[in-house]
Length: 116
Image 1 (cartoon, rainbow, N blue to C red):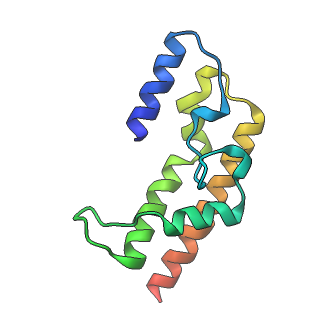
Image 2: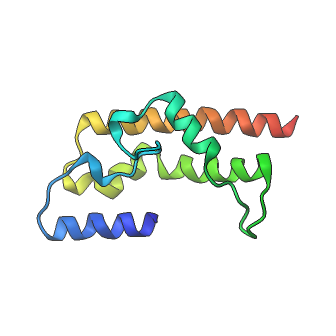
């Protein structure tokens, strides 16, 4: 999916399109920025698939791996790299930062809980 998002962004740039917040699939039930909140993002991530690479449910370890990948995906620098050429706006970058902070906090909690 991430590769498809990058290809869509590259195609949009080539076609001269401008930035739209709907280009990002936000981590909520609806996938929309307007629905981003700490509760909505946590619910989306906790209830989403957390299967291991081998396809086996792995509980906390699987969720830890998913959250680790999401930390990279939602890092503001990564989003800026991916969408910056399209003219991503400051409001969206602030929302990306908020999502990253939620993911990072949740990752830390799950990781620490699994270590104890």
